[in-house]
Structures are given as structure tokens and as C-alpha cells.
Image (cartoon, rainbow, N blue to C red; front, side, top):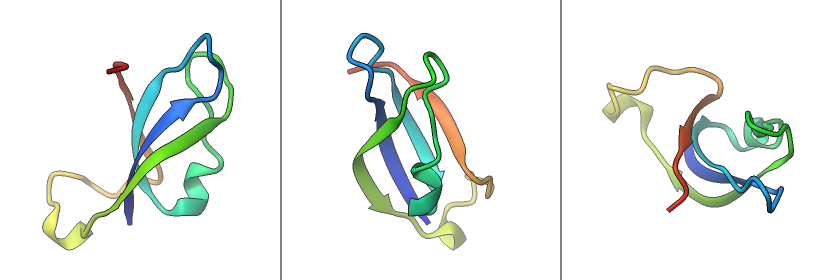
Length: 67
């Protein structure tokens, strides 16, 4: 399973999201604000067995404030 930081491809929107799932699941995601495609800007492997606070949801996305 991967943890990813995603950003909206619409320059006027540019919302950032974080998600947990498989790489092919990230390709299907769209911005909740404007509906545009999301682009992954960072990935990290996570071990589900050691991460008890993250229940398996396919995919799980949270809206994050732009840094």
C-alpha cells in the first residue's frame, strides 16, 4: 500500500490531498473542489500491519491545506 500526496492540476484550484491505496487507484481520483485530475507529487510505502490507526479504505482521501 502507498501513501501519496496529490495536487489538483487546475492552477486556479491547486488543492492538496493525501491518500492511501494502490498506484492504479490514484489515477482514478479527481479533485473534490473542481473535478480536475489529481497529480501525485510524492509517494511512500506504508506497511498496513504496523499502521493500526489507518483502516483499509480504497482509496481514502483527506483535504489538506496548501503549504
